[in-house]
Amino acid sequence: MTSPTPHQPAEANGPATAPLAAPDALASSLGYAGLLPFVAGAVLTWLLSGRADPEPLHFAVQALVSYAALIVSFLGGLPWGLSMRWPAGDQAALAVRARALWSGIAYSLLAWVAVLMPPHAGLVVLGALLLGCYLNDRRLYPALGAAPWLTLRFRLSSVASISCWFAAAQI
Image (tube, rainbow, N blue to C red):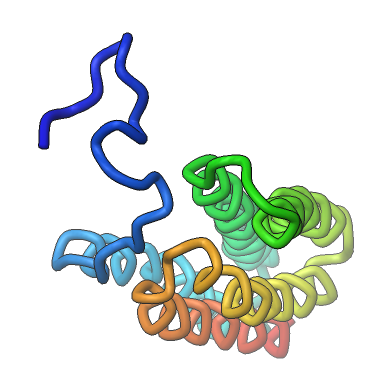
């Protein structure tokens, strides 16, 4: 089918709620590349802890906290984007959409609170948020047509969470 034109709604080309395909090689590669700052931050925190000059450690920890919070906020945008594909419909569809929208806001607000905390505590919270986002999305994604992405999300969220917790244990 053809792409929708400005005068032609997307529904004319098929249901807006069609399930998404599994992540392709590009999406998987970019997802795994996104783990590099998590792993590097955890390793740097380990290598730099206990040194006489605290400035490099402070920089590594702040970089990891900031990146983790950005990723949690990014994860909050995903339910929003997925819910936009859903046409207005029955009460069940509206309830899923509302949960997706509220979840997206909650992810960002909780990440913001974690950034304001002392870094050792903020990293623990961010690690828990990354895992909590996955657990919540595990319930949301099938209803939003994105279930094939859950395996990749689990792998990425697990490594990211462990990296945050490892770094928190070093400071």
